[in-house]
Length: 281
Length: 281
Image (cartoon, rainbow over all chains, first blue to last red; front, side):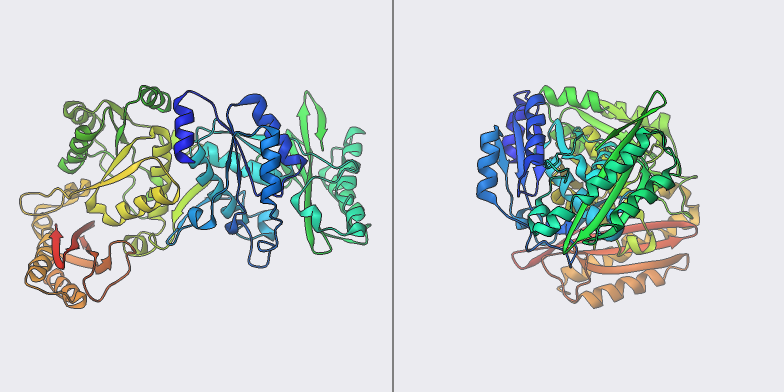
């Protein structure tokens, strides 16, 4: 992969890169479309990264659908698929870790200890192998996107980190490879993340600026769903990921919920433009 | 620097890179000569990296001789000098750290907590900016060289890490920017590091293979010098940096000594070739 990518770059081509853990859905394919629109060639990777899973998480049973995935990527127009072995990525004696301090410990990082260290380490490794001009990530994992952008800036990487919109099911549920774990009751209940954030969006449209009230309303909606066990609902500055008390510049309302044995996350981006607050679900 | 280096690489040139903290001596210039022999162009950097100094170390008073340094580099034939600001390298909000676990906590890392995290982070940043084909380091800092090689391997960096021989004063003292701190009595006492390691070399040449006896002899010699306060004297596997009890494959005998207020380090490389042990001071 390193050799192929080097040859491509030597021709003056600008590589677009879509790193994934496979179990592809429409969200991944929207990243591929963004990459195809801006870069040539497009390289996708499929690697279920063991180091970003905690000891009690779903690494073993994480959905693996390599054949269907590679067909989908080929049909979508991806030029190269990089699907390394765990032992190629983490050979015996591997010991180098990258950590973005101060952004990796809160929110998802608090619930999933060591998760982001695994993410930043594997993403840096993939970026070093592929050296793309642009790398594409979905905004469903908003904290991850922010952390990777910070890493790229701090380490002077040549790759631009592009964070793309969330793709949703018709009823609002954010696309996720973990949605397949939901039974039909849980699947219905799972829309509560979207509905709670959509409620926040409506209240902001009506002039609400008090972050504590917005957060309280989100939490109340999440609690009202009997199958949902909320883990957190926070409203933070999109740059620092620190809690805010009033809306400002760019904020994120982030929720994590357990439904049955499945963890789901979602978020609402709130951006100030000329005194008005625009929201993106 | 990033732009200049990118242009150079686009021409197909192979960059040789010599990162330094300035206060240049003959050791640095030997790295430059190695780089000039193998690469063109050669880029040197001067950056006294604050993050590799502990709170009670000599960051503030570390010798800074920029004018003399840049003249020496120019005279030696270096093509580019990169001398960034601390605020360019560590802007407000910087938070990304690279750590090579298991190699960074022992020896120098035990005495200088956080030292190697600062080293690996700044070296990765410099390598990302310059993207050299080869980067040159001195073997006086043997643990540093080993850690940087591991980082380059684990992160799939394109740069080859070259570790060059120690350059010594006529009486054996390893060249170091910190030697200027020594008064004349201390300067004489400072040769004890070389003499102790040279004693180990002689005993190995006479067939000694017992690492504990070699270590004990080094320690005894260090203790015999009244101005020297030994910090450690260890004999470790050159790959894992773990203590050995008998010589094998490649080993390092490493010493750290305080003389007055100056910390000095030195080491002896011991390599097995066809059953014989070759030593390099």
